[in-house]
View 1 (cartoon, rainbow, N blue to C red):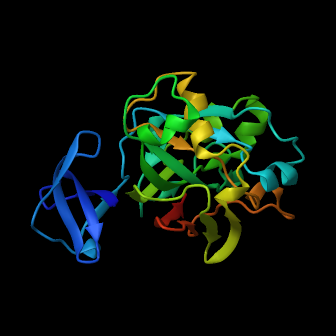
View 2: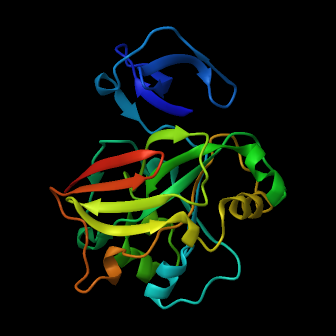
Length: 260
């Protein structure tokens, strides 16, 4: 099932289920119960929102083998965890706004994101699927100048608009074998597969649930593959007027323009 959030004509935030016919408006939420309505809308006619309004955004660093190799870091022994502010959230088509502070070193990071469907605490790995609603695409936009001077990543990762998410939540995917691509103005910057993850999805959810309670709607960004901008020679950073895309197999493409 493919679930979206959108604005209807009355500017009410709604959930919908997408199929070959279009968008079926729904009553309820994916975390209680979605009740599909008989009406069908054209997907091109609705304004897409982030498909989830998360209570928390939890992220992993260095979770792809090739990315760890390109940065010269050893493989982590356990997940490297940080948090993005929820105010960084934005949706499909929304602009990524370069901040006034160090606007010239803003990087892209294509990521698979987990959406938690049920309150979860101390979940064993073999039960992790029971608390996962589905998956979506995310872009962990990063201020590299701030990241490398602060010594921790909260400020670098949490500027407004630094967490584009979408276009949909998909509930029936094999998260361990999905192609993931990032394009900048149509040029492929990152191309990998989630099979290169060091810590797979079930391990991530279990590990985090033993650290803190995962509430329904929690968004977990699972790390980025190799090909990030700051490791390129010369480095490639986001510039006003560009368009950055994150495409994940089975989910779709998250597209965001970049503005100053």
